Length: 399
Ligand code: PLP
Image (cartoon, rainbow, N blue to C red):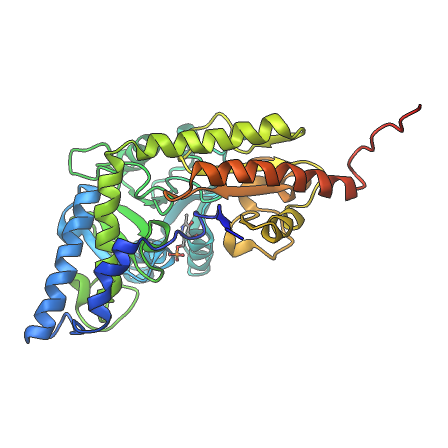
């Protein structure tokens, strides 16, 4: 059976070109990038080339790219780097974030609260958007950092980041954004006079953009002071100690180069068209179904749909048996009975949130796969609804 993978927001496939670029760095080029001999210099040069490619993708400076182990570490480094007691010198500090962040931000914020940092969690509108007025209202004299995700991993809803970052800067606070679900999908311009000039810290992760798991980046704008979380060597300009993961850094550089190229092709338009074809196909065939985040700007690959009167968990399993991989809520939550914190924050009832599924396409998803999914999903939904006591029974036919 040809399996159809519609869970690219959980992780993307590794591109063959990325794998090929990495291959020599597992075997013959195994040097430590900190060593001064030839083996080391070869590794150093590969790391720096990759840094330059990534800086080009973000229109940032090479020195602003800090390699980490992934999105979770980058988010933690941004929050703790600005708000740990070492950075605040014990002064009362205030963090603003939102109710729909990934747990890498939410749980880091909760941990900071225990150290005395005050945290405000701004709510979202029913479309999943943060209102600039809500951010303005939350700002205090001691607000040191605002952390708002660029696009949500469950719904794909894109926040007005330019406007939100400008508000933070006007108030003298730093601005961090978790751009894990945006990097490689939308063009980003972090140059000093570009549209994202007010973003000080930006997170992204390799395995959401066709590179391996366990590698990521925190963009740290020049002049932003960040306390390291890990103590050790002087790697990454003293911002992230630990021997560089050379092979994965090379893979991430290759993925960044491929993403830069893809963004200039018809690829993004075609991916949006494929996602729209999928949504229209579902909505025209299945009643009492809708799009979570409908009407808000969304990244081109994500579709979060509710199918009233069924449990997403059951649909995920039914589709898995039919060869389709999808996710109910975020991957980190699958298996948990709790409805998604993102969907409930948008005002969905717990029942509707538990009836919601995330479909996320990759650059490799084909129209044939979407058309096949459009045959399988309506049948699976109909079967599960028939078993649901909440689903109305058809009137008995009289002959
Ligand atoms: N932030 C967002 C928005 C994500 O979607 C994810 C992964 O699902 C992460 C952070 C964590 O990234 P990583 O898996 O690289 O730690």
